[in-house]
Amino acid sequence: MREGLTDGNVRSLMTSLANHGFSLYYNNLSENRFIRHDRIYRHWDALKDGQLRFTESGIVYEYEPPDAPQVEQLIVIFSPISSVPRLRRFNWRSFGGIRKYVAPRTGILRVADLGGVKGAFYLNTTFLPSNAQNVQDLIRDFAASLGVVDNRIVLYGASKGGTGATYHGLRAGLKFVAVDPILSDEWYETHESDYHYTADGVFPRPKQEVFEGLVAHVSGSVDRDPPRGVVVTSDKSPQYETVVESLAPLSDSLLFLNSTNPAILKHPDVAPNTIYSQLMAINSLIMDIPLPSGKVAIP
Image (tube, rainbow, N blue to C red; front, top):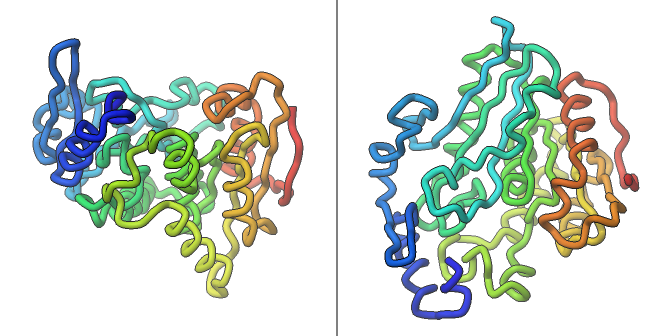
């Protein structure tokens, strides 16, 4: 992945393999190993020992039940990017200790992100054209199996996970907390040598096009309530303007928290320096505590 940022031959190989359903899962100083998509389920130890499960459509997930027998709320966590060359990079455990800080009787559903080179961002890829719908089906079916109603579901994610939380929250009409979500490919393609490997046909549509259409559809809908979501970001992040502008048509129902923390210098700094606001937002939404809309500056 690193070599592909400067070597066109390596990049071409990586994207071609991704478009044929192969993912990097191991490397050392002398070799890189790729695995075919349909073999992941037989090879991943966490799937074989039951820690992880997968749906008929191939979406991998992990469930952490609450201590209480009854589940009243559900938090769905989407994974951020991890470049660890092992299968666990597809299900990087963002906010591993969240159980201690959320309301009782809350189940935690973690959704893995297979596909693409750096991940599918929980969207459709060229090789997985139904990926987004399959993720939607998992969330809906799993919540129904627990008896959890829509109003007690909150989607959460940071960075790539924030992309997933925003997309599926808007599409399904579910509450969400997104931390500096990546809603456009343009900045990374222009300034970071296409760090996410999005410019060479791995995705059928760029993120900016996907979200432009989704936001227009949601903002123009008259048959459902407007979405409730909290977006935690910082004007020191290069994603800030894109995030605010992309979601502007929904600003009457969304809360944008803009952190002025001096420790934030770039995009990866936002999530670890705004934990307190993320927890506030998650617990407020899951307990149906009213939150304002618009932009609010936070420390």
